Length: 158
Image 1 (cartoon, rainbow, N blue to C red):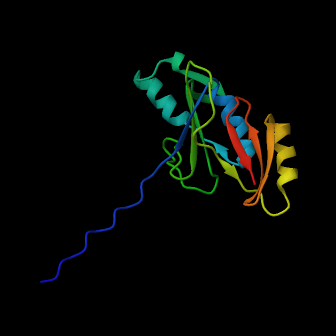
Image 2 (image 1 turned 45 degrees about the vertical axis):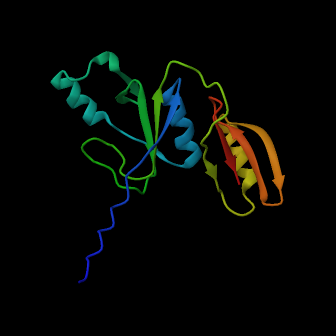
């Protein structure tokens, strides 16, 4: 008797959600830092407003178009997205407004890899965007710079 192997489940779609006090400024920083694109959800928002499913108070103007007041995402520019909603279907960071400020060390962070010999140049570029250097690390396993984004979220540049 032969058994049929169970089908391999499809990989899960995911996004990294980052709590923030100002989702739109964080989206601007990270879109510039990663060379990503801020999602344009204006068609979805306009449709929800027309249906009465979303109030005007739940929206803001962001780069000349309507956006959700309390969340916005950035996505890799080469990844697919839903043309009806503007929602990315690949690598994404979603910034959601929360009332409380960051209080401790991140338990999850991004590592940026600009390429061999480009760390110092990338750190300088990120500082211009509003990041700050927290410390430089040199260990037997490698070297990197620990930085903080404009709201204090740590990330590393290798």
